[in-house]
Image (tube, rainbow, N blue to C red):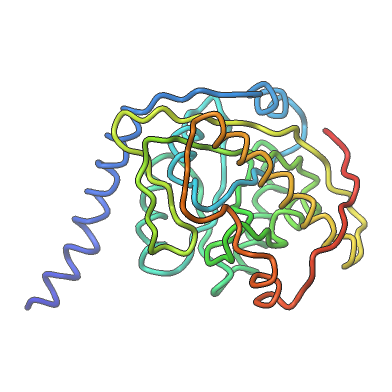
Length: 256
């Protein structure tokens, strides 16, 4: 009986409560933007967009991008229990969702996103550069692949607020804005990804994107005065050991 009640609460009550709570928080937030024209100019182009951000700032960005004038977006959610809640929340905000992550089903979900953007050129995609499981601040290959296969423009975006709670037990140190928070969003200049890249060039592009986004996030955090006891990115030696790769020099990428 108790298990049945628990399943009922988890499946029906909790998702509704999460949506209500997030919407209430979102309505209380004030957004201050920097270089927002990069977004609106890119939305007017004939190319889909591929948004790039750090996973820790997801909750700060979801409400902002849910506005109709900021484009239509497809997102990826993991198949975990937490992912189920996130998928329900994001669908309620008007996003299209595919299910998968680096922990399982990510490749298939990425293919679904590519097919969706090829079919609907007005549909944009967005991925956390460090995936759903990290390492924190280490870019994965999903965004370069999406942009390469769809012909989309990559647009880096960073969000920050000093009025937040850092969930220190999460791998990404999620920064959840408090009621009434002022959130600063900084957009980077969109850029193209060449269609013909070999494995080495793709890796170099990944590292370049990572560096650009970390720099952009540092600017956003500097604007708000946000401070954390841990760095935006796990130490390079640790992250490279986990991924079995080494940092490489930057690759020139062209602005859109």
